[in-house]
Length: 227
Image (cartoon, rainbow, N blue to C red):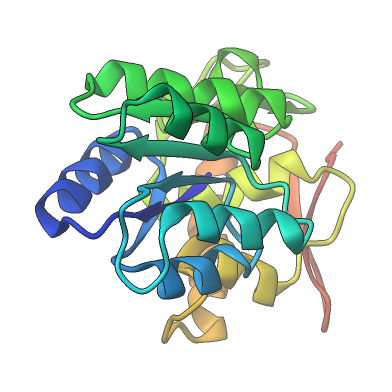
């Protein structure tokens, strides 16, 4: 899952990003409203954490524009503005949750789980299954139901396989994977995806799973059930 943090206090932004990365989220940061809005409009994020008091464009305006463009990405407002009027305004213009500073880390993580679950972004119990292969996003590992063998995944391996297991029976393009895993602005080459797909294939085979990753020339990758 990829999250965008729009927060102008760099120290706080770094702290939030660190917490999220420790929970195996992919995270990008924007430090003003204009950059934040442009990144949020890319459509590659599963959730946005948004401050209100931002330079160049405040958080309310960012949220208004996001909803005006029919982007339904879950948004958690995270701000020092704790007055009722601000809370009502934020929720009325499209925020999914309003959290005030200072906040507890566990509460922020619970908010993210709640708003993404409502949108169907994550699965119950942080697990995904395809045939006999089980992916635990919380533990960053895959296991085979038939053999009971499991193996840990790297951060990008986890992100790539999570995308594929959430889009079963679909071919996922290389471009889509790069945007979701490396971010909208990146210097990744296509062969990076091929390298990570190779890593994932080896780990799936290690578990004894029958699942295979199929490459469709010129299109992308998909999961298929083996024999």
